[in-house]
Length: 306
Length: 111
Image (cartoon, rainbow over all chains, first blue to last red; front, top):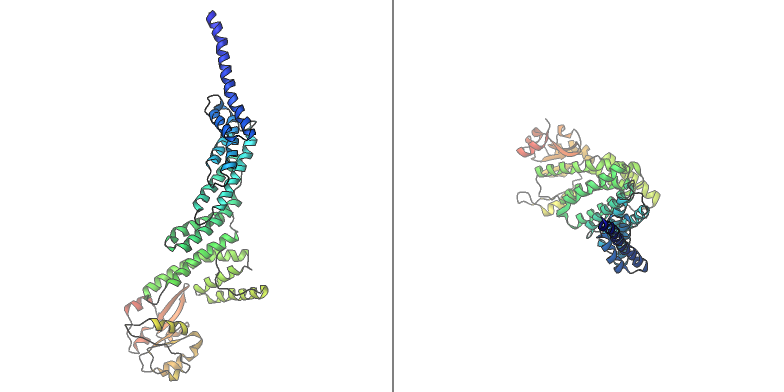
């Protein structure tokens, strides 16, 4: 019994010492962080994360997020895919998860927003024919981070911008390698359809969808040669008409939204001509000529895409 | 159309035979063509052309609705946004020409 009376306080002292020692890791980590000694801060915050007491605290992960955010800024700011940034994000998320309305939650959210915006910027700079897959990954990551930080974030406007830009990249890839055209066309159509689901009156998506089908039809026409027999000609004509008919509603919508757009008028003129509706083709041709007179522009026959 | 046909005649042969395209102003002086194409704008010349081609094995092709019933052998039409052609077999056979089965199958037949 007497031994127990001695042991209990000693046990309490030992536990207290352990907690203090653990807290020192965290305190020291923040101290080195403030001093700008990121390597030391990282060493200590990683140790804190591995500590059985500290790994239960939201503050640990908040400061870990902060250390890794600073490491990202200092050493990987230009890296399109940054391991430091990923750890920073995970840490801030964990801090929020542990205490959604705690001391560190608002600051964690703001830091996540900051990191998300760097991810978004890297997605934007990767939207080219070489790095577009990184752009897609980063854009998804951006949305994931923002959804964690602010669950009610509306991404519709950014989805439209991103999808339009990505569709442009895919169009360039088609021009570069027509053997892969089918798979790229499918992706492009999916992107425009996503935009139109968000905003059925998006001029660019309507026009570009129209042009996409139109150009596929034109490609078939241009590939025809004098060696075709009547049956082949008939079959190709059927395919062409299907494509131009797919193009038409989008192009008409684009016209409805902006009747003074040169490229749309040119596209409609071409589509109706190809559908053998010369009356309507002439109508849009006249509107185009009128527009040229009003604007003093040149009469180009190539619609192109946005 | 004339320019496109001329371009085609320079690179293509039919059954290994070359062919040439002529622009005819006066149907009365056209000679003995294998094919006569009368564009929509020249439709008023159809009856004069048919008279001039009496007894000749010439395929007459037009591109205005109704002309397959007025002497043309083949008449281009638009149906369902597609370029199709009417074929009047008796108009063709009356000129000692035979109609290939595949042509008949692809055509809109007109009596």
